[in-house]
Amino acid sequence: MMRRSACASKKTGQTNSTNPIYRSPSDLFRTASSKASSKEMERIDNLFYSYANRSSGMIDPEGIETLCSNMEVDHTDVRILMLAWKMKAEKQGYFTLEEWRRGLKALRADTVSKLRKALPELEKEVRRPSNFEDFYSYSFCYCLTEEKQKSIDIESICQLLDLVLGSQFRAQVDDFIEYLKIQSDYKVINLDQWMGFFRFCNEISFPDLSNYNPDLAWPLILDNFVEWMQAKQS
Image (cartoon, rainbow, N blue to C red; front, side):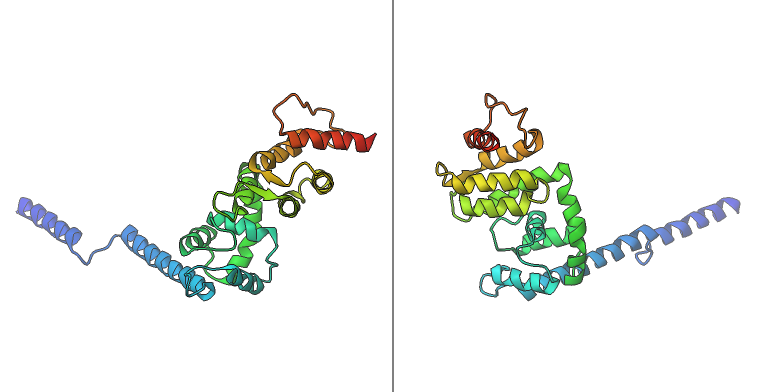
């Protein structure tokens, strides 16, 4: 009798565990989490389409300006460039649905209000040394608007330097912009020169320039800038 009872109990247990209605707490949590994630993505998509151009299927410059207006952020604010970096947006002034999803999901923002509130934390993330060099490089590449374009005109570079680097290296940026505007040897700046200036700001004592060695692998434009600075100081 005892043996039969044990078997009956075992069978009863098996029946419960294989019952299709039965859900473990972890299963229920996963289902709820999946539904919440699906709803969040639906809201993110709906937000995208509220700004997207119907014919192109992308958020274009006009849509971005409207978004900025709704967030009460100027469209020239560096945090909009940071948002593009977070999305890994490829084309300046345009966001695809895939890019939008990538950025807003990472920021856990499915409304304009949440997106606006996420901007300060996004700025902190970008300004971490582990991320900032990538953002600095991205900002140059993002401004290459033509196919096979590899350089940016001086006027645009001056604006970009002020936007991206001005808050961290004000003195260096101001002097370099002044030099770029008065020199006549360079009409455009390439990525190597752009990254070289970032390295210059991080490594060279300024404004005395005491540890600058022109024999090291600096872009020639920086050698010329240092010569101009030294002549200006003397």
